[in-house]
Length: 224
Image 1: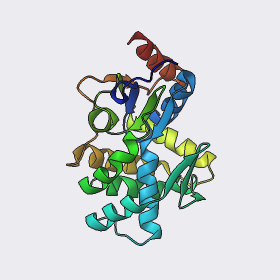
Image 2: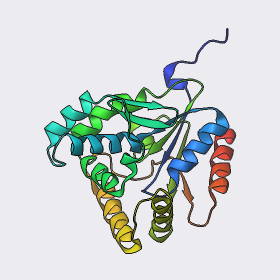
Image 3: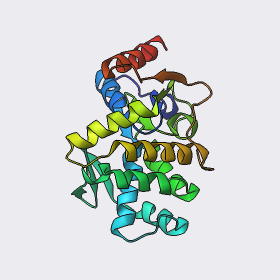
Image 4: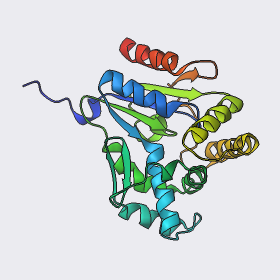
């Protein structure tokens, strides 16, 4: 039997970037192509945000949020996100939940409570992790770090299309404003601000198709 590599040697591809940069879709397709596990860290924060709404915990109550996150029963099964045994995959994609997730993510105690959950996804044969601090905080030893970005206009257009396809109402002006506010909040928070790791490869997806972006990331990984 081939020996299992030490935990720290299990390969990780960290894909970070702002909201609607395409990192979630790219990460899922890269993981599928390589046969790796997938971590959607944004879903964890959205689940925490949804739980805070359902259990009446204020977005600025640092201690209560950390306690809530520590007690959450979260599972991912067959592409579905479950909270307390209930599929909430559609609920966590609502725009207001995304905005609340960004708001609670500024709390260091909340981020600390989710670190162990995220690192537990690192299993053989490898992991593709997408988020905002995968390469800088969660997996600083990732074999490949990618920072995906795109113009705010391109990202707003993508988000608009996603929301409409899922049956949500959407307004382009509101989306542009929300994205700019979330970029500002995510980039300037004290806890793990959104920024490329020093050794990350930058990939602007404004003019790229999803397939082109996936091919570029897979090529970079194979070169490593």
